[in-house]
Length: 125
Image (tube, rainbow, N blue to C red; front, side, top):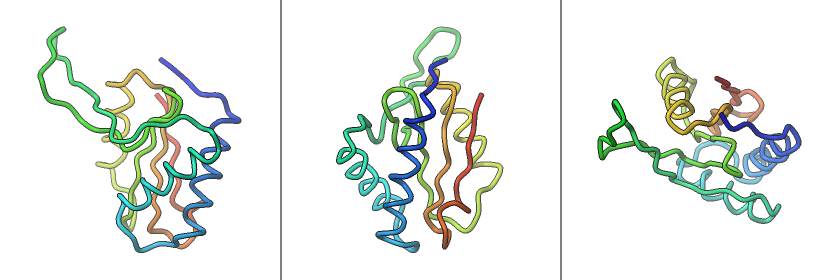
């Protein structure tokens, strides 16, 4: 499993906080996703959005999969939300994405909260 450097994680969370301070809560997830990609690029942090995560069963590609919102530096998965609160389904979603992608760590980021720090959930396998 691939893991990230703590300084990179700190920079990513700072970037997310900057986006939240600039835009505030109440927008669509896709807006926060795109704004975070701009912020990461400005910081020189490599990231990809809407990354396909294939599903294999018994060594066979099922031809279907999922899309991770953002994968940073091929080591950190970010799932962007704009919801009241996280549910068990959101946690299950990111854990499945981590398992399928071979990544060790991810974050659920809920931009709907008044303060982003109240909407950050760290998930590790």
